[in-house]
Structure formats: structure tokens, C-alpha cells
Image (cartoon, rainbow, N blue to C red; front, side):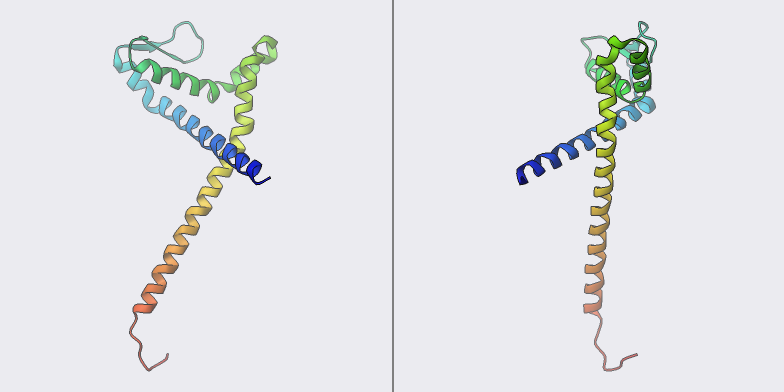
Length: 147
């Protein structure tokens, strides 16, 4: 039973960290990626798609980064579009199901990871402050007078 609990904990933490990384990639793509891809000379907006994606020369090292950025945009920013399209065209459920599952599983896992990390950081800070206060108290000179 402990092994199953360990596997579940690993799965939840991996899902949560992956979901946070997915959103971080999306934010980077929207803020800085546009300038990087547009100024590179080897990337251009993909004219064959209605949504905003990048197409780069396959020989360029930016092609992998553009594919990562496009995947992040698909799973985050354009997720409602793909889910809505699957309602109209049921054959698109193969795209919409993983997109929806990413959010159904990833969002609660990311919240759990964020909350647990914040609690651990606050507890560590509290321990450091207690240790510093104990050292400060121990370093005070002992006088015979009490206030």
C-alpha cells in the first residue's frame, strides 16, 4: 500500500509541475517568444492555420522551440477552441480529450504542488527565525536583574 501511495504522490507532483511548466511556456511564448521567432529570420507565423502558431525552417534549432511553444499554446490558450470544435465535429474528440484531461488533472495537481511548496517554504522560514531568535537569546549577557 505504501508503494501505491508513493507512486500516486510522484504522479501528482509530476503532473502539477508539468502543468505549471506548460503555463510558464505559454506565458513566455506570448511575452518573449514572438520577438525571438519574428526576429530570427527562420520563423514566421503559420499562414495555414487560423490560430496563432509559429512555423520555422526544419533545419533551424528554433524549430524544436517553436514546436514546444505551439504545443503549449494548443494545450492552454487554444484549449477552449479545440473543445468547442469537438462539440461541432465529433471526430475532433481525439484532440479535445487530451486537452481537457490536461486541465482536469493538471490544475488540481498544480494547486496542490503550489500550496504544499508554499507551506514548506513558510515552515522553513519559521524554523530559521526560531533558530536565529534562540541564538540571539543565548548570546545575550546574563545579568542579575530581572525586569
